Image (tube, rainbow, N blue to C red; front, side, top):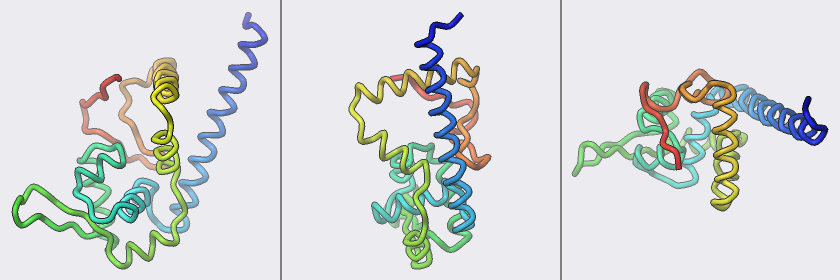
Length: 170
């Protein structure tokens, strides 16, 4: 039988997990309803807007995503006329991404997405707090037997990381 303190802690953890899912779900629906874009697409245009023209690899790094994943997001944004990609004249492997005028107009009226809020919040923490969160979430994925699931984005079926890739542990 669980001790009263354990029961209280488990109840509070479950409530906090529910709150996180609730906020992520509500923000994803709001963003899609207001913009017609997925959360990852809005996140990408917000990052580009905040940093200006970026290389695809730089954008992927700022979004903590695999470059292949970012290319898929950019494909859809480019089709909508929100971003442009320009190949470097000196190194054809380098591709710069920037917002179009339409992309800048859209980003000005777009709500914040959960991924952006979470990323900024985590980046503001020190190593001790990040370590606690890292190990806690890692353990939770183990409890759920989900360590080998490909990481899907919030509110979409889009996946990060190419098949067969696994993150490394700090």
